[in-house]
Image 1: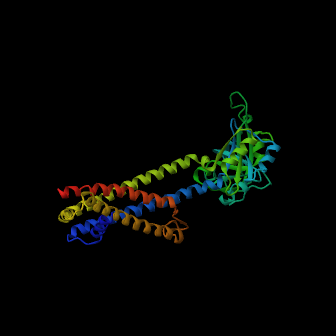
Image 2: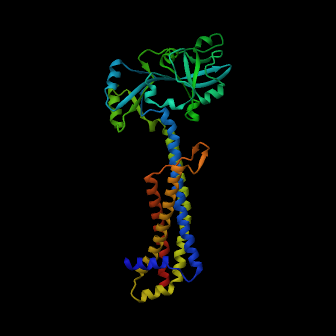
Image 3: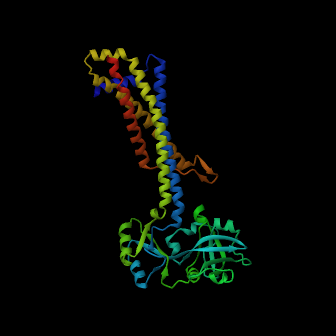
Length: 400
């Protein structure tokens, strides 16, 4: 294998007498360089955008969340709460009540979900960092914290004691609602808006937060009835083991989801977009590698006399084919490696010096991941292998 490799290096790094061949070789190398460079930049940029998108849900979603396996109500006894506290890998947990409600403010209406929380909620979720105006819930008058989107739609301001926000939920029962009994068909609470949060557009339009007592009273629920339990796990905790322990406490009558499963639709969308982006840029890279095929074929045509000479000196057709195969692989690997190194340097500079900004205060998010480096290397190698093999096959005709 040393003989084909030696000749391949001589052909690749030695200038040809024909300027056209030199230009074609340079163009082919630049194409591989640009393909590897752009593929890694795009993958790193998409990884950054993915983490940036998921970081918003991390403020809102717990590590684990337990729901009732049937119905909307999960009954939790004091004994079960004590057993939950004894699970070593659970750092904190909070009980919540969630239900769809109707909001009314000065003849403007909106449908949302009320989320009644206890005092442990802020120990499980990083909701404090999402408060953009006002304060979190206090123990004074009935209060709620609204999403920024709900606030805009209803035109609600905080601490407006002259105009209270009305929360309504249908009372359970049978029969039709008529104009004469419409007021009695809803449980109603008037509350003060004490703060506004902003996580993302979807959540900002969906949830309002209240104290547990207000939500329970509004929904007429018993003291031991909740909608779900949210858990924050200790670092390095085994999610599957903790989920099994929680399930055993409730005799298997709960459905437990991880943060990833809670954002299943978002994760599927991001994974699909990542796959499509990879396929598109792999197609671009494939087109660029056609230049390598063309460069090798032109080189074979230019070296026909040399090929015949090597064959006369004892080189086998297989060795001659390997010469041009090696030349194509060298061109692909060197161009791809240089492109990858330059792309890595650029990503590091963006991470440390914010070269590209989305807004004056927000740099374009990028993420350096070993898997992206591996994906680029494998893609370049496989495509280069195929292109070089196809081009090297033309050397057989030069012998005939």
